[in-house]
Image (cartoon, rainbow, N blue to C red):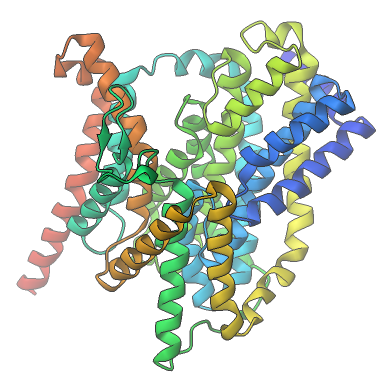
Length: 500
């Protein structure tokens, strides 16, 4: 009851004219930022910080604006991902699996609409989680040590690898390739160069944006060019725009389940929307994909990661505000902004500065409503990107990819890496190797390595520390089941087919 009273006070803060305007500005700017790969919410927030300080905004108003950009970008990135197969964030890579397949099948409009509705659903569920469970979950998150994170990362790798594509060995090989890419650069502890081959441009490792745009966007350009040269029709008509009642009913429980899972994962410092999206997709595929339609444009494959990553974005606010522990790069920037505004996150923040915590919670819900109201009517406008002639669309995607990379890194060497990975991605497509596990390995590889080293350092080299807690043991068992069950099920199906 007390939480509801505090939430009512938060709505009183969020509905003030200034804060309400900032919510809408943040949602619109976030959507625009998300549509442009290479900028991202981190850069947008960093650019706006001097303006916020110059304007003298109170802390709650500044945080409301910055958070609006954060969760608004989650939806904005799904637009370029679904329409053009150009993901700009790790979590959007999962959306691309079924989102772009739906576009190629002429269902870009329903895919975009489901993306908006799923983002709203995940955001709404996470708001209730923030209200009811914030103190308890902040204490639960502290139980995750390095060993638990190692088990969680392995489970994430295995869960997606065992479900992505039609071949488990190929998916595991793709994951291994992603881990190999993650190991390029200077060793984080010894500063010894690894797999740099004497190239200074590789000492900083391979940038996520370079890898993602190379493997997805550039390889897609090569595939589109190849299909066009062969006289094939690259994209079908974008068809109807509105989502049907049947499609909403079919994806409803997917949104709910994925929203809850995404929120719980988002609470874990360091996990964030990437792990949430991958786990939500693999979990939903295991639960509901009885027809084997995931990966072919199934809207549930769009709803699951979109609901999860939006819920995770809100869930990440719990460790940020109650523990002062950022769960992602964006929340780390938000932490810096709070400290610059003389606000110290921690257990006493909710009691001492309720207008900041509860005003932010209320503004998140208002922002999610605004995103839904603003973006659903624009779906028909977004899908008209597919009306662009192929002779303009193909080089346009290429220019967008190369410009984005150069604007972020300023390195001609990275453009060469982008091209090389584009060719690798094209070859992987031809060989039916899934691309999503590569990105998962690249993004989570450093987190796995750092926590593994930390675990072994604390235990004096004793590997049994990796299974020294009930949480870790449960995650190892789940990983073994995720790897073994699909193999056993495939053998049983073959045996039944041979008997018939």
